[in-house]
Image (cartoon, rainbow, N blue to C red; front, top):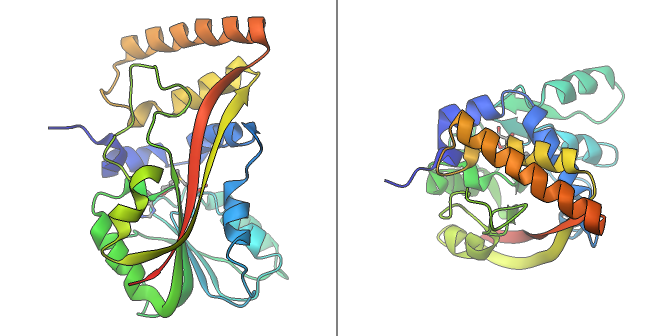
Length: 263
Ligand SMILES: C[S@@+](CC[C@H](N)C(=O)[O-])C[C@H]1O[C@@H](n2cnc3c(N)ncnc32)[C@H](O)[C@@H]1O
């Protein structure tokens, strides 16, 4: 049987118990060449009126919603399986009494605690590949969206991020840029998409290795401690040499955002 640690609930729960590992990977998004802030650009492309009710499923650290709350007037809800991810956002939110509120809720994409037709927009940034029962989640998205509601999804390209030549891979049957439309077709119709093809330009070996290390939980075959140590050391040598010779390493990055309407 193919191992799929990226959808194993115990792996997801311990991996995202705090935002630490996710924060290490976020740094890599800041060194894209050409620059690309996928969350902001995807939201801008929606031309929001400002009064939409929005549910961010797998909201993680809650940054997107806190950003939106500075100007948005509609209901803003963030839901995540792991409340440790949005703990800081929740505290910040309680200190900003005058700001537009964001509701942060612990819950699962597969059983949304909302009435039918509650939202104008659902966003699912980099989270569909963690769902063991994608169809169940998509039918929940469809149920809680209004009739003319929209769904915004982001995904990564199918190759292992950072370096396609390393011996560990992410689960190839996950939701990736190349198959988003097909995987959602039963419930949603694609209205628009944008696929970014660029590279991460890494000048600092330390942050590259931290980001790579943070992915360990999701790689197949699952590396044991010794193999992982050897692997990281080999990567350190490769990356440090290249940075010394060429000033940086460049790894291919493919990211996409997709806007859907209900079937
Ligand atoms: C890669 S992070 C993305 C976080 C955020 N959306 C972003 O783009 O920065 C994936 C998030 O999905 C959450 N998640 C995974 N499975 C989930 C589920 N079944 N229901 C709700 N959230 C889930 C994780 O806890 C984690 O916070």
